[in-house]
Image 1 (cartoon, rainbow, N blue to C red):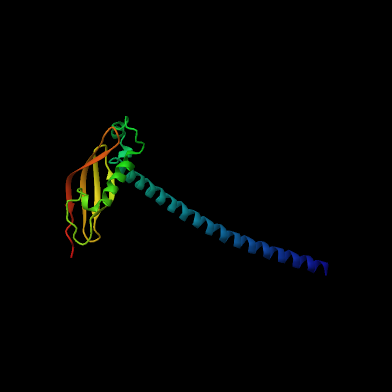
Image 2 (cartoon, rainbow, N blue to C red; image 1 turned 120 degrees about the vertical axis):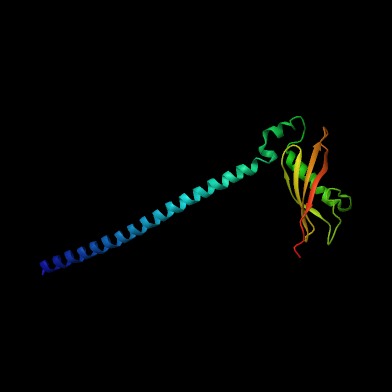
Length: 164
């Protein structure tokens, strides 16, 4: 009887070991497949990040914050963030609505307002304007005097044709 119990325990232990071995082999193969998939995805994502960084660097070439030479132009002014100051002044012109001489188009459906502004360097600005139906763009120059007052001059403008 002792021999049978030992034999049954041996067989039972052998079956458990075989089951554990097969199960762990399947788990290991599954994890290896996931690891390979993750490494492939990681490589693709690193390439995508590199491409986005390259595009961002290209965009910063025409940006006041990324242009050291243009920032040197404003060294003697007491203004800390030039681009924000210029944008704020331009957006304040939106509040004047009737006296906003920067947008040379008469109101069609509603009043034209400046939506987006990009300060390119120490002299130039590109702005987007719209009345909700019609869109256009402006090319402006700006000057900041010694007291920090900003003045704008419209150089060119464009109103996109209405697709209707």
